[in-house]
Image (cartoon, rainbow, N blue to C red; front, side, top):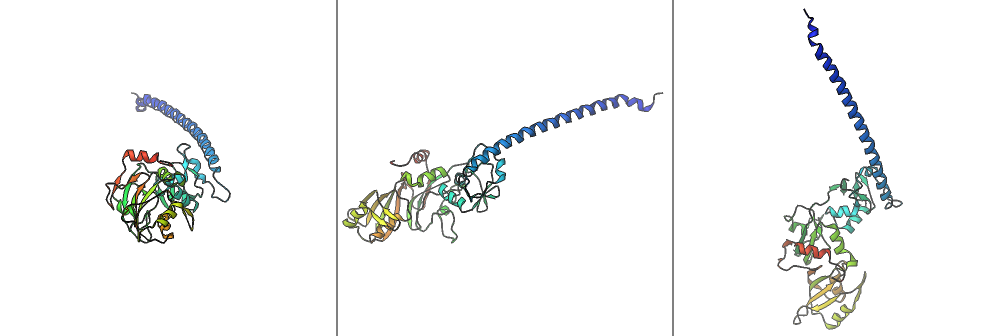
Length: 316
C-alpha cells in the first residue's frame, strides 16, 4: 500500500516550480521599477535645472527666493505668475502684478514677490489665501452700467458692485476691464481674458472712449476751444481727441472722445474749467456700444466682436 504522502508528490513539485517562477517575476518587476525610477529622477533633475535657471533670471536681490517645490513642476505650459493670475479671472494683468509685489501671492505655500516668476498649471497658487484656478472658458460680457454701482469685484463697505448685476451670467470669475466711477454710467466690459484686459487698458494702445456729458451750464466757446487746445490738471496735461456739442440747441450736452485712462479724467477736465458734471455716460469703449442694451442690462459679446477687440488698438 502506498504511503498517503506520496499521492501528493507531483503537486508538491509543481508548487515548487510555481514559487520559482513567481520569485523570478518579482525580481523582474523590481528591476523594472528601479530602472523607471532612475530615468524619472534624471528627467526631474533636468526639468528642475531648467526651471531654476528660468526663475533665476527674474529673481532680483531682496526678492523672495524661488520655492524648492517648484522643481517638481512640468517644463511645458509655463507662464509668468501675473499672467496666470489674470487668466484665473482674479484681476487684470497689471493689477495682478501689483498683488504679487505686495506679497499677496503664494505658490505651493511659499511667498513669491516677482510677477515674472514662472508657474505651471500644476502649481498651487493662492491670492490672499484663496486658491485660484486657470479659467477654462473665456467669457466676454457687455454691461450698460447704471449709476450707484461700483466697478470692483467686491467692496468692504457692502456697496453694490457691477458683479451683482451679472451674477447669473456665468460661473466663471470675471472682472471689469478699466473703471467707471460710481456715478458714471454706460458701456463696461467684463471678462476673464487676462490678455485682452491687459491690451485694452494699456496706455500704449490708446483705446478710444466716447462720453456723453451733461453740464450744469452751457459750455461757452472760449472754454470749448481751451479744452480742445489742452489743459493742465494736477497730475499733468490732459488732452481730448474730439469735442462736440451733442445738441446745438442745448450746449449743456457735450460729446467727448478721449483715449486717456486716468482716473475721473473727463470730470476733472470740466471741473477745471468751472463746470459741474451732472451726468456722465460712456457710449463707446473700444468700438463697443450700448446699442440695444438697456440701462442695467447685459449681453454676451458675439464672436465677431471678440475678434475685433483682439485686433483693436492704436489707430483703430
